[in-house]
Image (tube, rainbow over all chains, first blue to last red; front, side, top):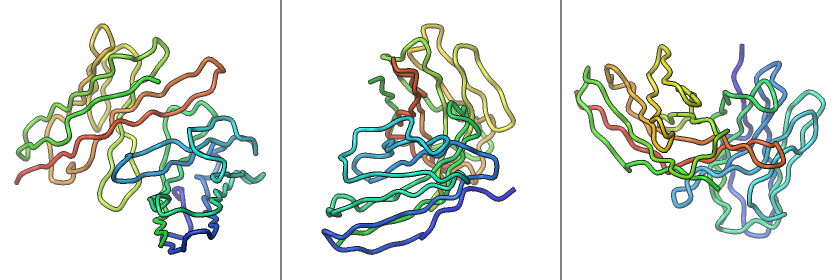
Length: 113
Length: 113
C-alpha cells in the first residue's frame, strides 16, 4: 500500500505570493492533518479534515487554509506569504477522524524569499 | 493546553537499552500519550502510544507513571538506525470533542557504534 505523498517536495516563493500544497493520503484513510515544522517552533498542528470538512484547527492566522476533496486528497493554501512561513509542511493521514495512529508524508519544504 | 517536556539530546551505545523520558504534568484524563520519531529528511513515524497502562510492541515499550505526569519510551537494544528525533506527544481531546496532537520539542538520540 502506497504511503502518504506530498507535492511538490520543494518550493521557493517570494513574499506576498500565495502557495498551494497537495497531499494524497493512504488509500482508505479519510482524515488528513497538516503540520508546520520550523527549527524555532518545532511541529505545530495546523488543521484536520475529515469527510471534506475542517474538524479541527490550530492557532494559525486566516492566511492558512485548506480543503479536502471527495477522494480524501487535501490541499493547503497560504496566501500573502511572509518570510516566517518558510518551513517544512507535513501532511498526515489516519483511518478515522479520531485516528490513533497518524502516517506522515515526507513533507513539502517551502522557502519564502 | 497541555504540553510535554523532553531533554534536548541523549546518547546511547549500540546494542544497549535507551530510556527516553517525557514530562507531561498538565496532562488531562483523556489525553493519550504518543511517541513518534523523525529520521533525517523524513516525516515523523509512529512508535507507540498508551493511556494508562504500560505498552509493548515490536519497536519499543512505553512505561507510564501511575499519576500519568510522566512517561518513558524504552528502546531495548539501540541500533544505529534508531538515531532520530523522538517526540513525546499528547493526543488531546478538547471540550468540543475534537482531537489534536500537541508535540513536544523532541529528544535527539545519538547512537554510538
